[in-house]
Length: 195
Image (tube, rainbow, N blue to C red; front, side):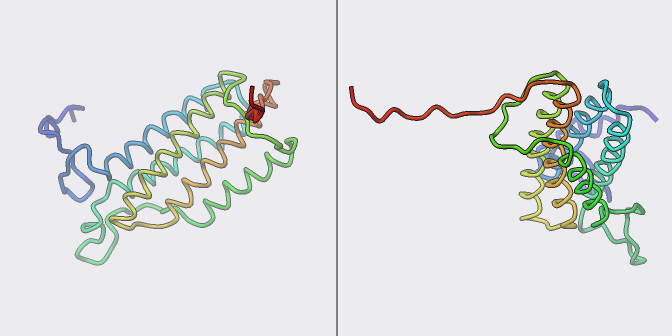
């Protein structure tokens, strides 16, 4: 099978189920952003970080492929004529969301309390984590827009929302592990005195 098919030369792409849509369709933007998110997670996993964190990130990447498949499926063709689902994969469950929450709770238990907003940065790996978090938030925005027009499994939205929280706490944990300084955002106050 060749990697190029030429079927997208007209600016369209095929959904699971065969329907063709424009490449800028919100459905494509949604799963395309999830794909981008997955790539950034791979970059974090490639850093010199704890092996257990690498395993968690790998599990998350697997779940993002599931989410991508859900989003890439034409909802009108998601159920076959025999009544079975077109995608024969385990979907996102409450247990998957709880897994992320447990990871967040475990990391937070070992971190000092947060008293201020934190500026992204301090170490390259931490910065990758913050970039990934912002891509996750963009994926969430895209998916919620798609959901408004064509609802899908609500656990997908919950998972992506929880993942952005996970990535924020992961950035803090990596700052601690890598002995990077967290820079607090301390806004300048407005001087109300007149000159």
